[in-house]
Length: 317
Image (cartoon, rainbow, N blue to C red; front, side, top):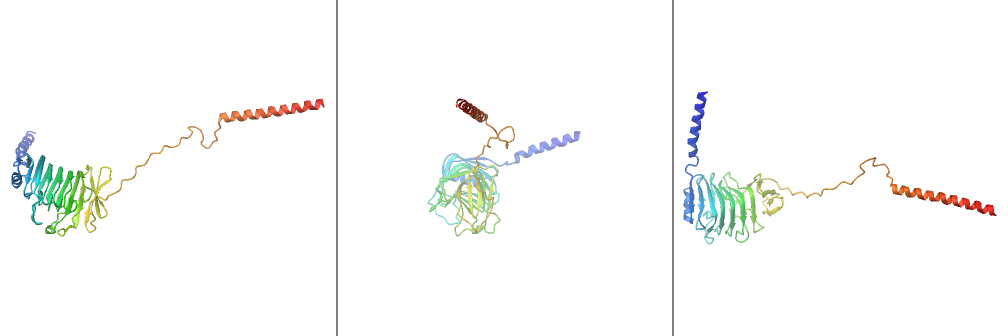
């Protein structure tokens, strides 16, 4: 018995010694300009929390490629890009990007605007979650799901794009066509937009090589994304369609099928029936019965009076 206590105590002490090693290098970093944010991401350790002290301008990109998990808390500030900047397809100047397997950015409490490309990108296995995030006036689009995963917790979109609105774009570019990663959207909350067209859409540009898309709906999510023939639809909590994508008949979508909500039925009240007796038995109205008896009695009396009168006439004849 004493030996067992010793072993348990030893294990407990060992576990306590190991606990500080979990995210031991994680740190809280406060940044007040674009360069500081870029540096914080470049040197991030697993579990770091990077918080904006003020709104900042970002002339370039913030890209996490190290395979760690980082939180960027905008503290309700704004990250503004240089919308007038130029770059080729290979020059990624999207504001916030998580690239490669294992790289995960939890982005929250922030507004992204004026990106020369996209506000957010999840690239080739990268993962980005969006909580209390607003994206507006980005030149190419709001969110690019490029062979990575985007989790929508609470996302609000303005007008993003040039010739037409481009909200969440699902794509797998040609340069990662051999990758096993597929563009994936996880709905885990709400998606709202000032626009109604192309809030979610399949990429259609010449650099796109998408053949498969994955859609997941968290069990407790308010809004959901469903497959509707060759389109995607975003529905609200009542199952009504909020947004509809373009058609992509050649793309396989792994997701739940859309079912139109059924019409509510009006409850009916059953007709009242006699509480006792056989329903097939004729029911007599007492008032009607009394009236019939009175009429019959009157007829009998009238007949008797007539007979008496006839006898009197005969006697006087």
